[in-house]
Image (tube, rainbow, N blue to C red; front, side, top):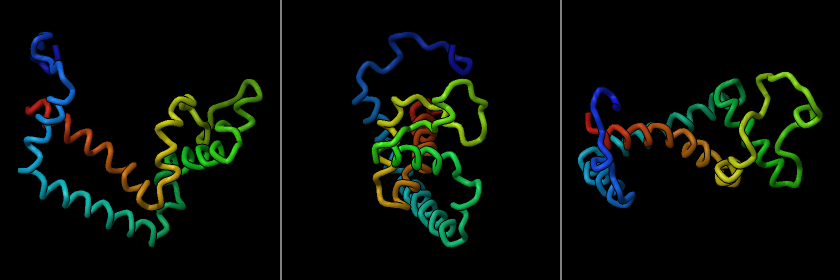
Length: 137
């Protein structure tokens, strides 16, 4: 049971391509709002850059993982030495993701900034929008 309704196996999409097409059918009607959200996101990132919001705690996790990924790409370790040395205490700059997620972080680490940051921030709202369109409440 999902969200109060029973979902049978026959109701689940069998072909992921059809699922993407089904999401894209509703996209043209909402495209102006989606494009407006992207433009607003770009302006928000530009404003944040000019206001030095990237140097504070805002987007701290993004910066932490991008720095660790860039260090790994340069031949260093993904995890800090204190994490690899034995028992350690979790603190706010601990890297908690497994190294498999480097494949997810690498495109954002090599992308020109602020493009990588904008895409990083745009993915969760897009996934939320896609799920709402798929579930059609």
